[in-house]
Length: 358
Ligand SMILES: Cc1cc2nc3c(=O)[nH]c(=O)nc-3n(C[C@H](O)[C@H](O)[C@H](O)COP(=O)(O)OP(=O)(O)OC[C@H]3O[C@@H](n4cnc5c(N)ncnc54)[C@H](O)[C@@H]3O)c2cc1C
Image (cartoon, rainbow, N blue to C red; front, side, top):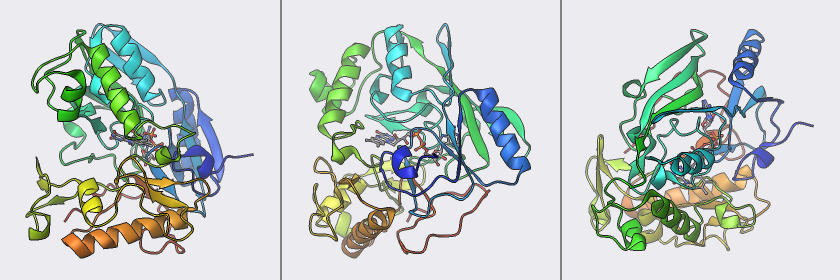
């Protein structure tokens, strides 16, 4: 029997997957894609399910799980299939004396998921070490090799792939460094954990260990036994504003290619929603993680409608205080903040669109 999205995603909500297939290799992935296209079936690609929330109605088409597992290492060049577990690749490359991924340790999901939102943590982005992405272009039905400059990594967590069903990532090639010493580190909590000053370096193995410890303490490593991690990591995207509103003058702020980036977690907490908030909201089945305010978590038996209602409540509370409207960082399919009971119509092949920021 086909799994449900509640089984396939780390938020553990969502209805039936419709037709379901697993692609164990790139060739099989291409075959399945082309066959579904010939049948005009809407296709939803999924891998780790760690950045995806699907409506209770599920997906009426083909759900295609990417599970291709090839890894090739040639000198400092690493090519991995889209279905490879991201943290497995990080561990493997570090063990082989290749530096570059250490700050990105412990992020759930697949290699193919990393270019979708230019995954990042502790001051590092996958685009820092990404050389090219091999994609299947569903318009031309051809396989194309894209250099990093074509991927549209600019503003926070954006790329040409995000919210587009036109491109399917087949594999990613990275240019790492032959070293067991990290680049200079800047992230305060990471430097503190390592006992070094900002701009100093550390052994990559120590950096990985420190990152894993810090992530675990924040519930940022998916753990089936810890409901704080039943979510999508950061649920809301850090908003980018042209001007910081007076009410948010105290917020930490960071330059972004589109303006000024503000931490959504800070805004949420300051708007009156501390970590753990939500016990009295509805059934209490959806709450902010008890470890940090930016993660919306399913406490065990939540529905997508409940996640959406909770997210709307937080979004509206933040907007009331700061005049800033938060949007989701994760991909939402057949569900929306605004009408949890009435999913937006399924779009089989929407054109790429960019996230609206205030
Ligand atoms: C506890 C936790 C902590 C997290 N921490 C971080 C963090 O520190 N930094 C960060 O950036 N993210 C973080 N995330 C989010 C998530 O881990 C990443 O976005 C990850 O890269 C998603 O990969 P995935 O394989 O799970 O993608 P999925 O959830 O399966 O898919 C996400 C989106 O990508 C699309 N997609 C997936 N694979 C492909 C492909 N091969 N081709 C085309 N489209 C594809 C899907 O259609 C969907 O739109 C966290 C999530 C959790 C649950």
